[in-house]
Length: 396
Image 1: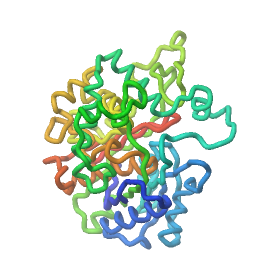
Image 2: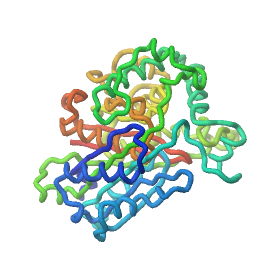
Image 3: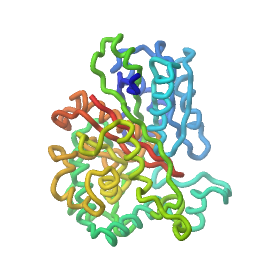
């Protein structure tokens, strides 16, 4: 029995700051995905919404919110939340329903209307909430963490601010070719260096913005796809949603502390590396099989870390991989040919779905000027707060 599910349709709402509600963005993306799939909403068996949870507004019922906006038709409904990994969790939930025989066609939707500036916890006192504590007790905003992580790479691996800037230059060049990206202008390393310092050593152009946007996928069984006239669909072959192992010795949000490794030997594989490893094992592939990767570049330094965590190079070799041009379009393993978060900004529940949209278009040969010739296998990777790992492997 195959464990693949078909990607029949992919759709997005452009990223930006549009000043409207997240449901509107999600509905636009959903209708685009349904049209791409050639499937009517009334024929969808289930809908999975990736949740937006911020300040108590009703993103926490995203599945039902999108179903109602599209028009109640009796579909099974699910809502999932895993912070930045919510979109991949939604893909995983949809895939599970299809493989279990509970649905032939599932619509996956994620959308956000993000606040201006960095994300912050909702009001009220919640001393049991690690996310609340790191803001209130330490003033550790997301950019603070990004800066600490960049400093770690500089100290441990010898990365430089020029390396970080080059990540932005690369991704901005790709984003300039993507009609869904918020920022569509190329930048130079000099412009990155001239932008304001946010969290030393990172500058404004090293860190992604917060954005509005939406993305959607129509997934189906392979059998349904064939009956629907799609003989060779893009297929999702693996969805990894692993959690960390104790003790974690790499500082991570929201826990700005290390667990003692005195009594317990740390696992040799770090959390982020374990995300990719689980995806590779399930898909029966390795990093050498990849045509492209879409990773969560919350900051330029974090993109470099993903190169190593995905096994694209050895520890400490990410900057060299970048300098050699291996991760650009036309290189050995292009990374973030969509433009990444550098070009989109964060629309938290949508971005992991948007990553799968980009891989789908690449594997179909429909990515226009961003197209990677002969793309056959792609992986997406990101990490959500509170130990939510996610990676998706798609093949053609």
